[in-house]
Picture 1 (tube, rainbow over the protein chains, first blue to last red):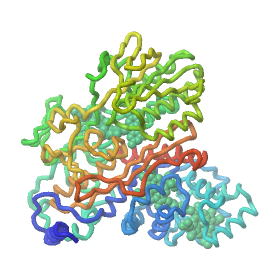
Picture 2: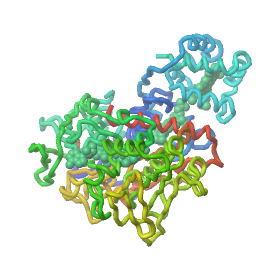
Picture 3: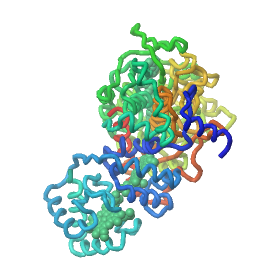
Picture 4: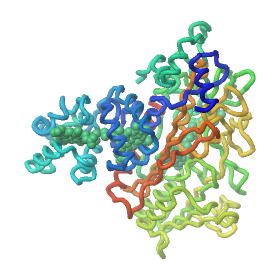
Amino acid sequence: MNYKRRLQGIMIAGSVALAGPVFAETPSAAMLGNTCAGCHGTHGNSQGPATPTIAGVSSEYFIDAMMGYKNGDRAATIMDRIAKGYTDEEIKLMAEFFSTQKMERPEQKVDAALAKKGMKMHEKYCEKCHADGGRSTEDDAGMLAGQWTPYLHFTMSDFMSGKREMPKKMKKKVEELQAKGGDAAIEALIHYYGSQK
Amino acid sequence: MSNFNRRDFLKLSGGAVAAASSMSFSSFAIGGASKKVVIVGGGIGGATAAKYIRMADASIEVTVIEPNANYHTCFMSNEVIGGERTIDSIRFGYKGLQAHGVNVVQDSVTAIDAAARTVKTAGGKSFAYDRCIVSPGVDFRWDTIEGYDETVAETIPHAWKAGSQTVTLRKQLEAMKDGGTVCIAPPPNPFRCPPGPYERASLIANYLKHHKPKSKLIILDPKPKFSKMGLFTAGWEKYYGFKSDNALIEWHGTPEGSKDNVLQSLDAKSRTVKTEFNEVTADVLNVIPAQKAGKIAFAAGLTNDSGWCPVDLKTFESTIHKNIHVIGDAAIQAPMPKSGYAANSQAKVCAVAVVSLLNEMAMPQPSYVNTCYSIIAPGDGISVAAVYRYNNETGKIEGVKGAGGLTPGYDKSTMEMRAREEQYAHSWFKNITHDVFG
Ligand SMILES: Cc1cc2nc3c(=O)[nH]c(=O)nc-3n(C[C@H](O)[C@H](O)[C@H](O)COP(=O)(O)OP(=O)(O)OC[C@H]3O[C@@H](n4cnc5c(N)ncnc54)[C@H](O)[C@@H]3O)c2cc1C
């Protein structure tokens, strides 16, 4: 720590009446998180039609996703280029920021009959890990309920093509589902998640 | 929406240190009178700053002064010109800001008195401020092209501020005969939205290709190269016969140090433009002149010799006048480009600075992002992105090394990814406009 920095630290800690601006040494969680709003919406609630909502995501999932982008392990159009701009510490700060926001589930055009079919499949193949109809953020499995459907399409297609790695046990379930219902089953699931409020 | 109260902001913005120092705050407890922020311009920078100040500290009185009842975004205006969307879809009002408790005044600022801390308007009103934020966007250097001025621009539009000129340019394209010539003359650096003229060229070419395929689009550029050049020209080769005998788009650049295709004069009657190398008579002419900071920045003495406003890049406070901050296109903000995403990002840093200064508290280190999406053809979107930090030693903004950059070329990616980028570009439009005006 150089002299100037130490002095700043002292000034802040001692809360001297401040004549000019005094600066903390790092960006805060809100400072970092607010830069993402142009693409992900204010506080991470995306207005769609495709960019995913990240408000209310679990902190574990968020960190996994960002590290995956940063290390180039996860397929992306642009997040790989963005995630490389942050330290691991900053990613943790942002995880705190976004995981404590409330997710808003938008009105989306979905086929009600398909959504109903999807619900049954969800219960059978996915609910175990994506609890509460894909709403739960308590695990590290990401949010499915109310997520933008074009994004879910892209993501499922990346999973199926191997561009994004599926957790082993999820892969097994998705393969079972595919064998039984083909692409139509995946489509139904996406309509189900899109219909969730 | 405003699920932040002041306590949260203190905690979040400064981290533990700010929270500690906030214990001794007195400005709210004593004083009594609330702090006043006056914002000049309700565009991307101004509206964002207003909303984020109110979300952070609702005790601050925020007034936005803006002459227009509605704002038309420049972004996606190229899709209006290309016929892909309506002008209504890029129009936004100020109800959202009002719902955040922002006082929106429809008027034009004529003077800022830095010593008295007041702003004067054309309507004869005066507004006192503790801190003023100026985000007036760009003005044009009308003296650079003989024969081109504000009146001529009504019929030979620049369409570099969205609104009526966007519609005029679209109508002229619709009225043009098949086999006509369109000419775009982009400005020299630095200017608002570096990839903008080339996205415009792409979307006009797309319209011509499908509706007036015998036509030609000529770009007379005063620069040797341009933003996302490799990606654009590859796209033009793919869709618009660029470099072939039958090219729909021709680009004529200007080598460093020469004046080959720098516009010298314009004859409005015959729609003819002249450069040292070329003379083009066009059916539809789109001349985008060289730029400088918005008029009010000059009137308020906020500019230097460059014609732009020097600022402290951590707070965006003017280095010329205290208590006045300049953000967006009008500010000297390199290496950030003059873009809407940059204006939105700077406005948030500036909002935190203003709230911190008014509360006499520590400000966190800034963090900035820029992204510009462009659409080459329907189903083919590209982007450039960067994450920036402030360097305490040099006082400059720096791009984080290893981060950011361009969409990969056709050889390193797939059309499926390009189609996704187009959808994400449209999502970006919805999200940023909601973040600014919602
Ligand atoms: C064709 C085109 C395409 C673009 N595409 C993109 C894109 O895809 N992505 C991107 O990020 N950026 C894009 N941009 C750039 C973007 O529009 C600007 O960078 C952005 O608007 C800058 O914000 P600002 O607040 O500085 O200025 P503006 O948004 O222009 O706001 C300035 C406001 O101030 C008001 N004003 C001016 N003078 C006064 C006064 N004296 N008193 C009161 N009010 C005043 C004006 O009426 C205006 O509303 C594009 C620009 C163009 C032209």
